[in-house]
Image (tube, rainbow, N blue to C red; front, side):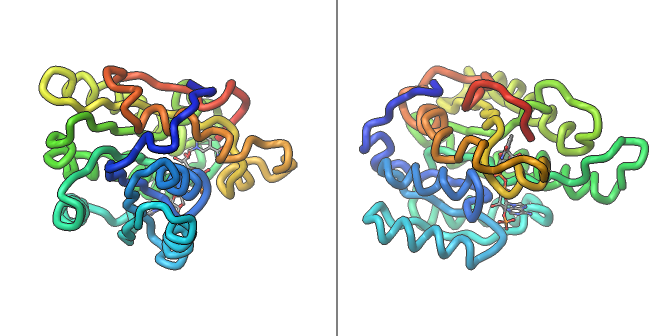
Length: 252
Ligand code: NAP
């Protein structure tokens, strides 16, 4: 699915939520989904960044998006239920979620890892996708075919030394995709899958690999075929799987 070719109208009439939509892969995903007809709910913590994405989508003539500011490090069930309520009241439907927001935390041995940083990383990378999905399930269940996509990493498949809470959170994401897809398989039309973006040119990648020349790293635009495939109707029936958006390399 790394070479999937999506028609321009693939996502027409669909409402999709993207977390971490203000920067990096989430920003490009939001614009790409909108370019294929989706009405995108842009969720993030910095209003100015979300407004810039909103303006680009509107200027390109794509469906008018919506903005929801939420700091996922502080998002409990109440805040997530408010997200669901706003989406239901504004659009009356939700066809998919891309859980993309994450933070790197520290790259350091567990022996020295700061427990508060651990909690912070876990809240954003693992707890927020769980609680937000829980709050959105009633709305997703009403869709004809809803897609939940969670973002993993190569260290979510095999936790490598020094990757700390980030790696453990991504191992948790892989587990959550397996568990949730099983739980929903026979009782809903919701599919749940994971994407490992692979090494991708973003601030997170630059932070994790400061010595790397960014020009040598795959751009977010290049990995979009898999995002379109999993969030669009061509992946109906595919659930519980973890996909690579590009051929594997050392990555965050
Ligand atoms: P990025 O450039 O750092 O972007 C991360 C996004 O998450 C930003 O929009 C950020 O918002 C948002 N975010 C962080 N903390 C948040 C919070 N507390 N509340 C709400 N939003 C928050 O990272 P990226 O490289 O695009 O990563 C996107 C996803 O791909 C992540 O799940 C990452 O683990 C995964 N991934 C990336 C790579 C890679 O090579 N880039 C490889 C494997 C996996 P702000 O702009 O406000 O900070």
